[in-house]
Image 1: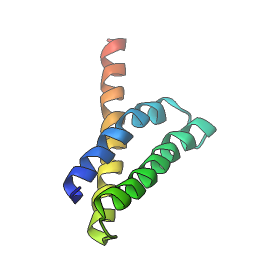
Image 2: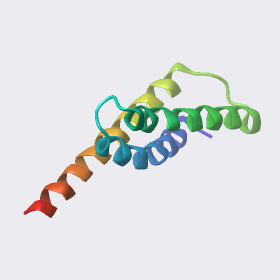
Image 3: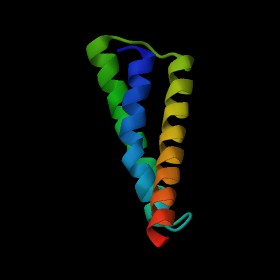
Length: 89
C-alpha cells in the first residue's frame, strides 16, 4: 500500500473521532480517548501493512499520516461547529 492510500485510510479512520473530540470537554477523559483511540488503530494498520505488503518504515509516511490525522480531526470539528451554528439559527 502506498503512502497516499495509507494517509487516506488514516483520514477516514480519524474523522469520526474528530466529531467525538469536538463534543467533549477540553482535556477530559473523552477528549483524550477521541484523540488516542484512532492512534491505536493506525498503529495496528501500520503493522498489518508491514506484514502483508512488506513495506518498510519511511519518514514521509509518518508525516503524511500526521497531516491526515490532524486535518481529519480539524475538519470534523469545523463541520460539527457549522452544523451546530446552523441548528441554533
